[in-house]
Length: 103
Image 1 (cartoon, rainbow, N blue to C red):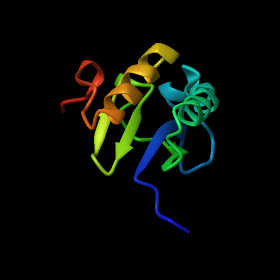
Image 2 (image 1 turned 135 degrees about the vertical axis):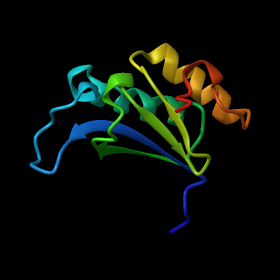
Image 3 (image 1 turned 180 degrees about the vertical axis):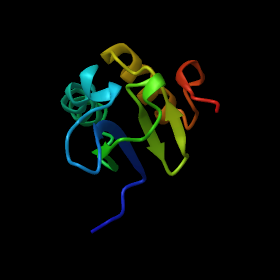
């Protein structure tokens, strides 16, 4: 198996008890995953993996998307348009400055 060049993590708000309790889940973060996967396929970005995560503890800025290995944390990612902008930047080898969490 080849390691992916990038890993995109989408906060699903799951906590230790197993129940989604945070903002990301309430703001439909999981509905972004099928769009992300479809868009990656359309762009032929086959070396990028998408995963849902437990709570990333940045609830006030949710939904949260993280891109590794760059360690870019994006906040308030609540639309397909924002996903498109992040993927455009990723293809260019850059960060999408508009949504970066700087804390």
